[in-house]
Image 1 (cartoon, helix red, strand yellow):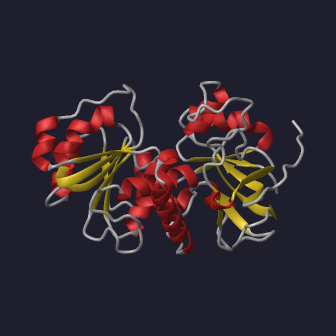
Image 2: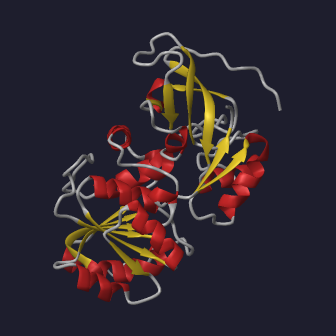
Image 3: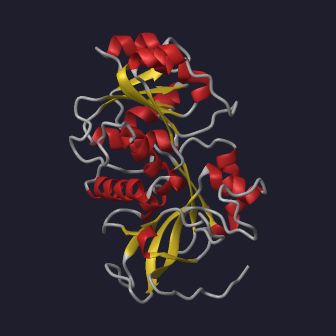
Amino acid sequence: MEREIPDVGTGEVRVRMVVSGVNPTDVGARSGRGTTDGTAGPHIPNQDGAGVVDAVGPGVDGLAVGDRVWVWDAAWMRSNGTAQEYVVLPRRQVVPLPDGVPFDVGAALGIPALTAHRALTCAAEGPAQLEPGALTGKVVLVVGGAGAVGNAAIQLATWAGARVLTTVTSAAKAELASAAGADEVIDATGDVAAEVRRATTDGLDVVVEVAPSVNLMSDVEMLAPGGTIAIYTAGREGKLTIPSFPSMVKNVQFQFILTYTTSTQQKDHAVTAVSAAVAAGAFGVGDKHGLPIARYPLRRTREAHEAVENHWVGKVLIDVTP
């Protein structure tokens, strides 16, 4: 429908959206299963996107009309996401996008990249924020390296200096994980633990886990003492059985992650680091970066959401305005 262009208030920025990114939680909001934050409808979905600053409210510093930007958590605790032409957000959620960086990259950050950053920095010993060298000497296993969060974790961990292993379920996905920069790609249908033992000396420092109900037992087995398992999905079962004594012996750390509810400091660290990786050319999208793109015009938003619901491998983007 056509709506009035929203006004900007104090500390707010209006963004003319160019590209909107679709994530699984967006699909849940649109399909009627409800929003993660319980926001009442009608609800315009999509948390992530990129565009151009159209207006700034009083008290806004560091941004001007015409600046290229990316946004995060646009539909969290509000009913106006990025699947529309204009979005008004607090200044903190509008981040400069460097000249020369495609809007597609900006629209693919948000949930996947910020989740990946938290997963890679949630160990009690740190680091709290990624930068080149921050993970030097660390071995990271990214489970499901062909997914959006998995792809982001591979790219960010590689940029930060880690040795990155990943698991995939097909030859096609193996090619994507390699393109993202993984050092070792392991067939998830085989003996993953044996491959990790072959590829490491002391085991894994961090596991970025997308299927905890299936993999948790073997994750603990593969971890080095003091290692961390970062879990960012509930898994099919919605419940986990933790091998308590083996975890105690290794002093394993378990970290559950929902990017929407991370602390202000954790989110600020993630936004800063992801922006730095993008500016350094260390984070990209498209086939050559292991994240194929499927794109739809705004009028076909429903089809874009259905592509995510049907497990499109890559990133689904919506072209909002030219």
